[in-house]
Image 1: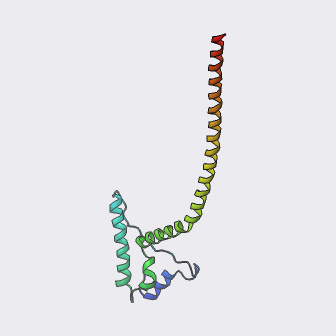
Image 2 (image 1 turned 180 degrees about the horizontal axis):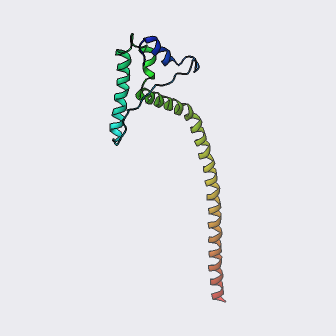
Length: 143
């Protein structure tokens, strides 16, 4: 569709309809999905990514600003970006998550101690009752 570099660069910049700090990713899917395996579909996607970059380099007069836009073209670049973003967010959330887990562990430890104390008290009462019954039985045998 594009013939000149300025057309491609203008399109890839998304100027006019997105903010300056927002950069869209440009992806394309293979034309024929048909009945193919997931592995074959992944290979086709990779091939489409390569074909698009090749087309922009070879068939557009002046190519395109690769330094600025190449990292926003193709599913591979989108996947890499999303993996890095997910990793960054996990790292940011880790301290808060760890603090919540430590708080919950402390709460569970307190509850466990309470339950253990109740269990010990119940066990002692049952033991005392059993001993009292045995003692009463032994006394009744002597009488």
